[in-house]
Image (cartoon, rainbow, N blue to C red; front, side):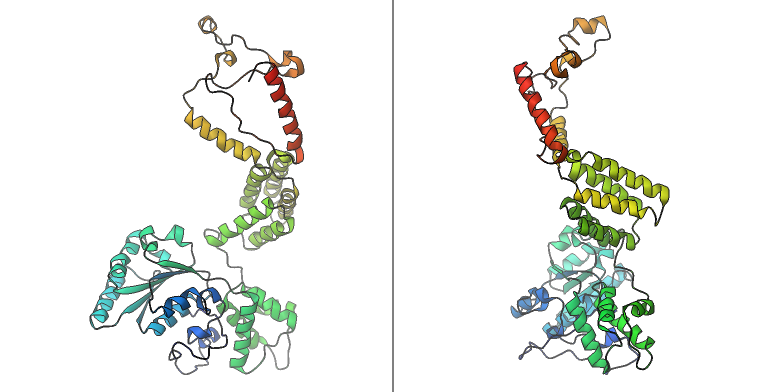
Length: 448
């Protein structure tokens, strides 16, 4: 499939002439017909192909190293790989990890060795490189190291998780970004110029079409083709009509991959950042994409205990109730309970004091796991244990003034520890004041 960026004004002195392309074939998809013919025509990725872009600088230095292109579909990874091979006059080989195995790799490597012996190098483009297993990824290392191939791998998944460390150490990772509204609009302009006719859309419908593309350059041109096919002579579609015609694309979202983790991260950080509007937006994005609502309910419970904690003890109650309400009502009625909990959590006072205290206490527990509690707080069910001092000197707190004895409960010789430090917000302000008073009484009553 063709990856699309669109066009921008070409520099007055392009680095190299445009790549040869076959005559225009109207039977080919619009996205394929409008594929850029040189890096100068690429838009949407100025950090890579602009005047100061990473690839531009690499080519200006006359040295092309192995790279991994990481980014969502329709952002130009395949097209840029082809154009790079043209710019440096390398032979271009393309394979897909979905359809290729070890035997295919061996054939490609052997062809590259033959070319190299004849004085020509090979750019090997591997689409969906993350689909290769660890052993297959390792097979690239020797041919990368001896210069047989310059590897350009493309992946939609996070290379840090999906690619071998050895492979990553030999290749630079370059990130392709989703198209924004401006670059998608440029693609539509280019399509209209190529077709010699305007899209039959009013201004709002055009904006709606751009949103439907979800940052995918190939998708926006495919949607444009559908609009042209559907329009009668002289007909202009509004936003509602265009949605009915193109049957809105599902958002780019894979519940097992980066789309899932990116959006749940955005939801969590919006709640933590006390932005209920952004949090509600990401919740709806995930629900709209088909995320399991009970998964979202569980994550809201986690947010309640991690980021709100005792600053608002009701946060956990509300999050749990929302999860149970969805479980009881189902979809779509139960989704409103998740929305209510999301807004509540984002609007609540924030504290991670319990979260921080738990981690600190866990570290201390692991370091001092062999220490016994002090004997005065241990039960003594037998006479021998009483004779050994178990329970001796224990003071019953309810019999003490203010129901507080001030005893030391840490293991002997360990000394008092301080893990929990409440914040001066919400309900924890009162908790902090109470703990401060108990600390004063403890000092007075000899408990440390």
